[in-house]
Image (cartoon, rainbow, N blue to C red; front, side, top):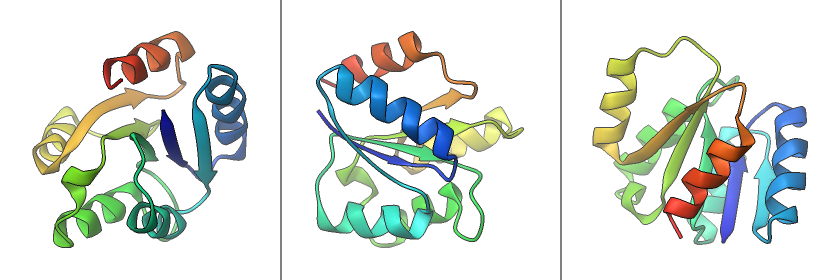
Length: 119
């Protein structure tokens, strides 16, 4: 699967790069919401792993932009969050087109199970 990671945390990107590419996926990552949005517009990914809390242009901003451009349904978006996002906020994001939410720290086995559900 072609997977895009959008997360400002270099350690998480390195971990996901090792695990996902090692599991036979094609993983690409960027460290900002604006860079991620650019790639989403240019390419089709099977899954987008999106951090909610990023400086300057957050995961919320990415989702709102995708909704406003009418392309949110073109991607399967899985949110990552370490922040104290309320369940009601996650439900609102799911109504906008987000497919799932995974809380940090990431359980790699759980992540791989989620990814396989989208295969």
